[in-house]
Every structure is written in C-alpha cells, then in structure tokens.
Length: 342
Length: 153
Image (cartoon, rainbow over all chains, first blue to last red; front, side, top):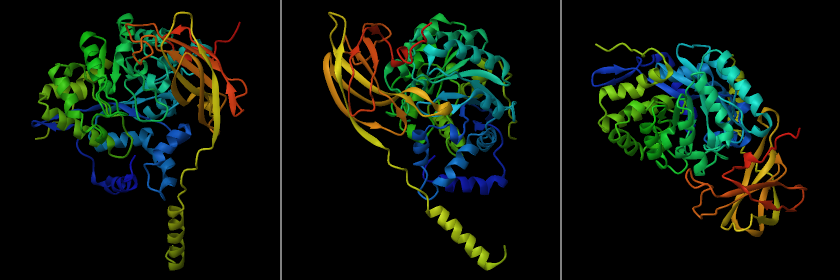
C-alpha cells in the first residue's frame, strides 16, 4: 500500500464496471496464460501491531480508518480474485502464514476457506507454526500433515524462514520437508530478507545455499526458492546467483521472482532477468508477484515483468513456461489456456 | 436524504471522520541496562554478537517467544549495554550470544561449522538493570534452539 492507495482504490471501484482485460498477456501476437504463484491472504486482526503500523503509514493521515476495511477485503479470496481479473491472470497460489514475529497469521483453515470460493482459480498453500518448536513440534507436524491431507484445495506448502525465525540449515525442522515430499506438495520458501520489522537478515535465514543439504537429503521434495534471492531490504540481488546455481544443479529446485516486478525492484529487474536468460534457467522460474499488497499491484507487477522479459530477449516459449507452464508442471496440473485474439 | 440540512450534516460528519485520523501512538519505552559475562569453552576466541529479545510477546494467537529488541557487538568476557525496552508489546528478557570463531561475521557457513551460541533468560527483567551471564557452546544454533526449552519429562 502507498499514499495514493485511496485514489487507486477509488479508481478501481469507479472502473469496475468497465470490464477487465481478457485473460493472458499479449506477446508477439500470441496471448500467453498467466498464473501468479505468490499471493497473500489474511485479516487485519491477525497482523501484529508493528506490521499494522507499517501498513498504516503508507496511508495518508485522515484515511487511516479505512485500513482495516481495505486490508480485510484486499486479503480475502474475493479481493484476490478481483486482483487476478484486473491483471488478466488465470489463477493464483494463496499462502497461509504463521509469522507472528513479523507479518502475522493467515491460518491454513482461513486460506482453505478463501480458496474455496473458486478452486479452479485459487490454489492453497498450507504452512506450519514453528515458534515453539522444542515444545510442540510433534503436534505441529501432525496438524500440518493433517491440513495438507484434509483441508480442501491445498496444493503446496509455504515457509518463510526469515519471517518464522528458523535457519535453513537447522535439521530439527527437516521433518517439514519429509512430510511435504511424501505428500507430493511442493514447498515455496521465502529467500533473502524483507523490509518488514523483525525479519531475520543474516545469511543462515536468507541465503538458499544453507538449504543445499536439505535439498540433497530430500530429492523427492520440490523446493521453490521464493524471491529468487532478491533482497528487498537492501534492494540487491544478494542471493540470486546462489538461487540460480541450486535451481540448475538440482532437479527438485525451482525459483519464483516475487516482488521483482515491483517499483522497489525497478533498478535490478533487468539484471535479474539477464542472469536468468544467460543461465538458460527459464525452465526453472515460476512466475509470482507477492501480491495483492494494494489494488492493481498484481497487474502492474506482471506488466513490468513481461516487459522486462521482452527487453532481456526471452523467447515466447520461454515466457510461456515462466508465466504458466512451469507452474502446471510442478503442481501436476493441466496446462492453462487462453483464447488468442484474432 | 434529499433534505439539504441532512446532506450538510452528512458532509460535515464525513469531513470530521476523515480529518480525525489519528497519528500512531508513540511506543512506550523503558530505559534498561543489561550486563554480565559471555563465556566459552577453553581455547575458543573471537568477536561476539549479542541479541536481546522479549521472552514473550503479544497475546492470543499472536503470542510468541523471542521478539527481537536490539543487537550489539562485544567480546568474550564482561559486557554492558543500555537500550530502550518496548514495554507494551512483550515481557521478559532473553539474551542470546554467539562467538564468531573464524571472524567471518556469520554464525556458521554451510562449510565451516565452528561458531558457538548460547542463551540465557534474565531474571527480574522488570528492573532497570539486570545481570545476565551467557555460556556459548552449541555450534551453528539460533535462539530458537534454546528457547522455549523442551518440557522436562
């Protein structure tokens, strides 16, 4: 969210009746389907006060009373679907979250409910609470496994070591990777850090190189390196090369470029996409935005990312893989299709 | 609703609501000093990083241990540090320390696993000055390795 939030929201509401763009993005005369792997759900009441303050400070004084309403709507299944529609995005992954130290809670049950409003377009990612691991790890692992098996529409797992305050190389948590692999649920893991208060920024929590032992030990578990090493606190590609190296070295490793299409990453996006292109790593990149954040974010992120790929010389087929086909392949789903314009 | 008086009243009310947006309250901070000793097994040396946390923070579903407060650098042996303790968002004080045995600034790399960590929960954290000694001995561990401890059978 940013100071122009209210104006943007008003514009969205005013233009809501004008119709959304057709699904997909136009590239070289073809419409390519788009799936956004990385979207957040939640409620205002489940944000810790320091994160509520961070969200509020982006809203102009005098309008702060709207933040609760806007957050609850934007982070609901209905709000997320609206974001997808405005961006011409066919489907999206919706993340559960247990990060009381930083950005709060979006419980598995809540995410499953939100996804249930349109399970053809919304895919749930379950998470696990780890902040009292010495005390309740058996109970948490059992609940995690049960949620993955029994809650409707859970296709994957979301972890955020830097937010959840546990090291990539801490073998006490490897049971999470074992459960996910055994159940065939790919794991999205946040890499690098973030500007949100309380987020760990030291390499053992951020550098995907620390994950290599787990990647080797669980070859049947898919690891998707979220943000692909983009450090949004320092605005650098701090761990991008480490992420690319792991993705190329291991069949069970992929990357996701969440927030690299945001304005904050404008200066590094060409460099990032150049590295992906030179490494021939398009088959290992699954598109995601880290939305919704604010109305029209998913659309603007997608626009910037597609333009960046075109400028970096990606072929249409590479873009098709990144924007949708890699998601289908990793999650065992049929390929997404959109109608081509005449 | 067509009454111009009602319309003016509504407009006035909306204006008041919009302009009455509150600024964020100032955090409630208490000046505090923590002092003590960081010790390591014989033969271990290197710079030390000390991290301070609330023992517990928030309530209800959001309640959790080890909310970050402050960090500073020191060395093995005695230390003393003054800081602002956020009163409203948590209670208790935990001191976590690790010694950087190879001086690379990182608590272990995937290849080099010699840095040592430890943690102590402060007693009497409601006082303005607390004494906390920390023994570092566990390689490559974050504070969650130590706290909260596993229940004793």
